[in-house]
Image (cartoon, rainbow, N blue to C red; front, top):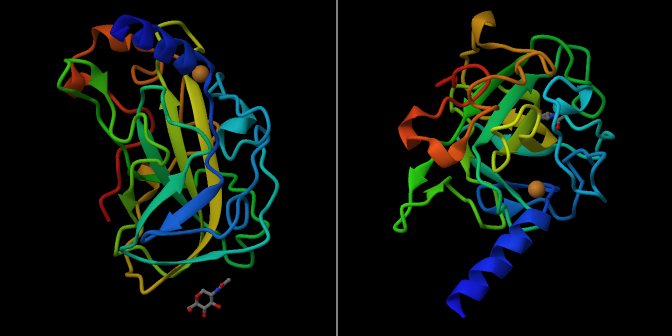
Length: 232
Ligand SMILES: *[C@@H]1O[C@H](CO)[C@@H](O)[C@H](O)[C@H]1NC(C)=O
Ligand SMILES: [Cu+2]
């Protein structure tokens, strides 16, 4: 029976996909889906993006959202997932500052403007299975908005990269959302241009963190794709 349960779970894992429609700030979730988070093109299908060079990789060709969330610098943030995040892979967060004269309600996030504020690394669980933080839960692994981030409007982007089939090219699946936020109580540090990337542009299909066989991987040898984490 234990064996049968395992098979059923494995079958479910192949089917389930997800979106991240609600930002959570210090434990308080956005009051409804897609209110400050931009509704993604896959809101119905929930399918992942396989080509990291596609325009979808920025914000999943989302429509703009009606509101902007207030996020004090130093806040802990994460996202509610529509389904269990059952695919193994890292969770990363990026920020992009809205240029002067533009609004988070309309800016498209183009240019070399995105920097990474958090990523996650895998580890072995008690059964010697390689797993990632928050895997199999219904919310993304949290991160902190660096306290030194200046006040102002930003796009915040979350992604969870599903690596269960990623040993083949263009078979990693990117699940992601972008939210419109206003950072308050912030500091006065900004990452240098060497920390900033464009989306698309930040990733290659054969980056070692994107095309990777996770069934033969030492946890601490995983190389998260994209720029290094900006510590603030
Ligand atoms: C962002 O927050 C500041 C400080 O509270 C406020 O003055 C400003 O109007 C806010 N901007 C938006 C777009 O909400
Ligand atoms: Cu899948």
